[in-house]
Amino acid sequence: MALPLAFLGIIYVLISYIGYRLLNSVLTKRHNARRARELKCIDPPSLPSHSFLGIDHLKTALAADKNKEFPVEMARRRDQVGAETFLYSTMGSTNVFTSGE
Image 1 (tube, one colour):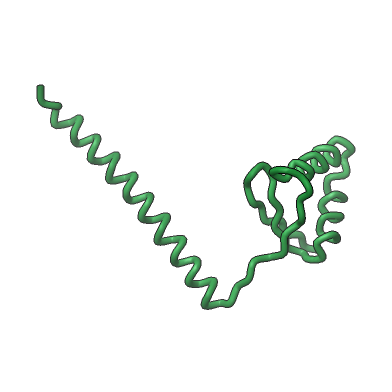
Image 2 (image 1 turned 60 degrees about the horizontal axis):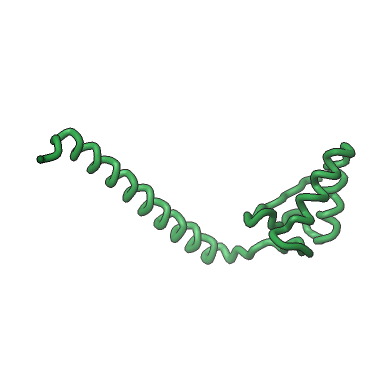
């Protein structure tokens, strides 16, 4: 039995959309990498983690939040790294923290 033409049209539109999103993602990443090279951008320093998946960062953030001292914890991390902008990893994702005075 042949599939209805409308169903095939929907499948085509979905596959086209997924292909567009993938191509757009790849091209955007390449463009951003090229611009970063042109501007001589460097990665910010990283906050060291002493446990698996950055669990220590999560635990200290939750404890600071519980004690209502979260901004103080973020300032401590900034002072530990020695930069206003730094990378830290928590639960497998890399985060960028920026603070301004």
